Each structure stands twice: as structure tokens, then as C-alpha cells.
Length: 210
Image 1 (cartoon, one colour):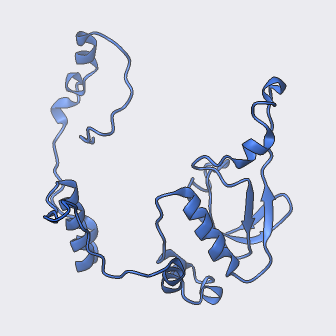
Image 2 (cartoon, rainbow, N blue to C red; image 1 turned 90 degrees about the vertical axis):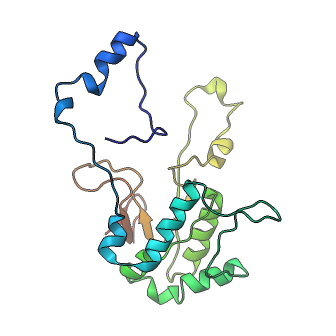
């Protein structure tokens, strides 16, 4: 059981008595509950990575407000080991010789670029995709408005321009060998959402992937 107050489940309205009866302390299993406290970062303990331990401690200092402030601007400055002057330099450092190294799944799993906005991620993905060999295959989504009276307020062009989180863009471009992510699985026993796959053979209406 988690004690994180930032993640609370929705609950039904009721009286104080209802709340007490629904509390975990009123359950017959409460007498068997034992409180455990995590005192060791298991990832660092298992791998023995000194840099990972330093990074973990830095995150804890940030969360606890222990990071020192700069007296001149009262800001917290995070030290970075390496900085690049441009986005092109960043991509060349993280993905050197991507045209040949992309075939190695282990090589791809060791690299990632984080961005604060989804549109920045889409631009990075499309730019890196153009560096892969082979022909591009485009797939378009089909958007429609069930209520024809709302067609003037929400034209199809407007729907095509929307890109909510967790959905692919209106025009999805892939290549053979390009890594992709399974957003939603319709056959639950086989793959789970978020599984990383590789395009093996794109077809007009479907993909063969691994």
C-alpha cells in the first residue's frame, strides 16, 4: 500500500461513520498488516553504479528542497556533465551512425532524448526517421463527425490538426526497421500497452512487426 498523498483514489460521498467502516483499519486483515520502509535504492544496490547513486541522491535533494540556491538570482542551478550547442550536435552525439546502428535493438534501448512538449518529440522522431535508409510509408487517420449539425463548428481539417496525448499524429510515417510503440493492444494476452516493436513489413492496411 502506498502512502503518497499525491495519488488519491476517487471515493463516494458518505458520513463519518461510513468512512470509518470503509477504512482499511476497520478490516479484519488490519491486524496482519506490517509497515515496511524502503531504506535502500535497490537499482543502485543491484547494479553498483556510482553515477546512478549520485543521480538518485540529487533527485532526493531536489524533492526535499535541499538543493542550494544561487545567492545572486535565488535559483537552483543543476550541474550538467555535458552540454551541446545545437540540436544537431545532440542528435549526432546520442545517435552516431544511426543509418547502420539502428539495426541493433540493444543500441537503441541505451539512447533516448527527453523533451517537455509532444510537438518537440514529434519533430525529433521525424528528423531521426529521415536518417534511416529505405522508403517512407505514410498512414492517415480517418476522422468524422457523427452529428452533421456540428460539422460547421468542427470541420474535418480541424480534427486532423488535433493531436491529444497517447494518440499518433494524423499522418503517421514509418520505415522498415524503425522502432515504434504499441499504444493500445486489442489482444491483451499477447502484448501490453507501451511495448516497443520494430516495423518489419509495412502493408497498405496493416504492419508486420516484431
